[in-house]
Image 1 (cartoon, rainbow, N blue to C red):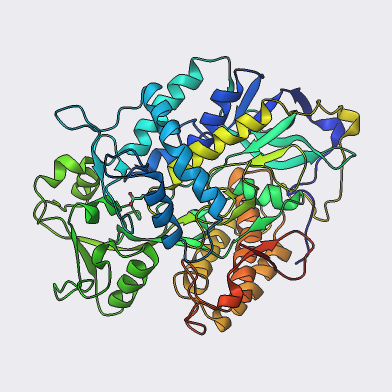
Image 2: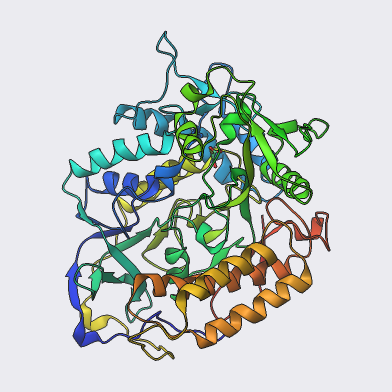
Length: 534
Ligand code: SIN
């Protein structure tokens, strides 16, 4: 794949240069927690693409998994996470997640997050797929992410943290020593490109569900942080492992709104178009691992619609008010009528390769949250571990950075490296059409069930789009550039992994291969995917 150092050409004399100590990119749970903690020592600036609250955290429903219940322990949480991860979990990272989780969640509670409680004030835990215990905390029924985001935004707003909304980070900047020194960002109000120099950059820009036709992710989830890191030379790991959530609302004209797994945790049942409970004889039933449930639904959908039946639950509208409200908008009362559902792209297990301290292979560059990958989720994330991942590994980065930030780079030392693309004032392609095409290709050929021919076709088409694409200074168009880059990476890593494991299923290689029990790593300029031990 032919590629450039920067998504857009730019001119060193024509950008405003800003300085701060720490730049945090993104404002979900991982970004806000990092910013909050580092603001005790540094001047911190958050750059975020839209409004501070817009992102995957805000939309998370089911909850946050943590071993705080009486009959639970970090050892049980560790075991369940590893089992779900299908042989690809980084055991040390899972241990950190399970053991450090309780103290991080207590801190979240102390910061004002209101999780749901029983009448006696004890925390209410629910169960989700592949958890051996009830360990998922939730808030306002099914609005957990929104409540966490509310509490953290309030804390961040009360501190001297600079928050720049509507800043689209285009690329990372490096100095002559090849260390990360800041970013190039499009100020969406002035429409000018600005440089931001910092002692360290923490990427917490979330996932890339928007690469797929059906996704539970909001519009902003186009993987920009991963793509920018890749262009700058960061390694990406396990990019073939996308988690497809089994149950998103599936109605013509309706968004793929998440129908939380907590619903199945509380007893909702999956029915096929004949009204049969098709998960009944599969180990784990409705609470089998997500990839198993998603594929079972996919198979059933070949014959007709699949439904999630809440009618056996008592007062489902009280436990799931968000789902209730959304379904009602489309004329479905969950208390009386089964909801049509289907799988949708939900979570990226892969991402910017980091060690257990959040460091990338580039000096001064850190990553946490969904855009990062230290192997904690393996090939298939355990439900509700993502918010906890954001909290725990953000905390670890801040512990690392407290003693360790490099000095700021001088503007003269910033490298202006190659861009082999022209700059178009207007999109070179019909960009809306291209965006739709990418989503269709990824869904059809690199989605829930993959095989060699489809992946080859997807790669050839995306490569052609990459060659024809000329950047123009609009966020929508810049996102498409990143979507093509990441689509190529997902497809390439999926082609080279000739086995099935967790979120990656190949119908031409339907079993796991013990020789492939390795992480895939890809870096710009590599012809082939590398594999490293778990
Ligand atoms: C859900 O509520 O089903 C989503 C939880 C998760 O993805 O961890």
